[in-house]
Image (tube, rainbow, N blue to C red):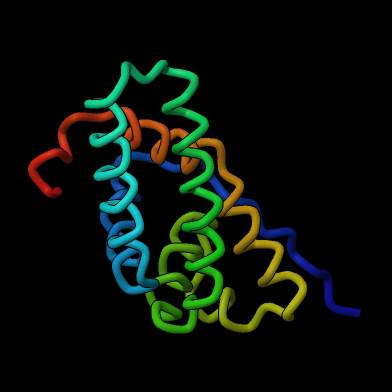
Length: 133
């Protein structure tokens, strides 16, 4: 009987940002992020937004982004497999050959990474992206 190897995902780091941004662009969420930034900017002109409100708005957008991304994963399949292989320190073919349940769990584990959530919170509270809107 073949031993099933448990694939473990490492913590995200700064270098993971580049493939993540490429994937986000391919799965059609860039416009959602920009729309969020526009809404946040408009709201902040109307009233002072608390840090808690910013986080709540950011998390709502994050949920929408995940939903949209999940519907468009096939557009970035190769990039996603490459990123997952890198995060799990395995070959790409090992990711590609996972069963449906194992692959889905791995994708869901990625989307539930605390660092990914922190990334979107950071973007949601940053003024650095104002020149994009």
